[in-house]
Length: 136
Ligand code: ZN
Image (cartoon, rainbow, N blue to C red; front, side, top):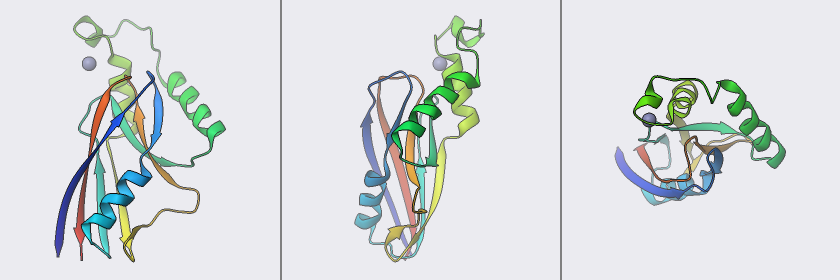
């Protein structure tokens, strides 16, 4: 069994942004040499999330709108007394910080309309995403 670890950087450019990281993850799966296994994509940040959905520009705009509607952004959050980004943490906790994907025939198994997105919730920032791959 092979065990492979890799990372890639993402420079986000907006406060809330969805970045398609599928090519970055695919590149690491190829580099790992794993043909059958599992890839865990993990964001070690408290104001980001990882989701799988469709890479369609109008839908991405709808998702950004839904994220803004998910919580009140101007509420008097307690965390804002020490750091001005409580709603970013709350949405990040709701969406989740990792996705696990099957690898088959050397490629990540995504549905025809599926892509992996890093959801930036407190940008712009530089983010580092980790990928752990196990299999053979
Ligand atoms: Zn904070």
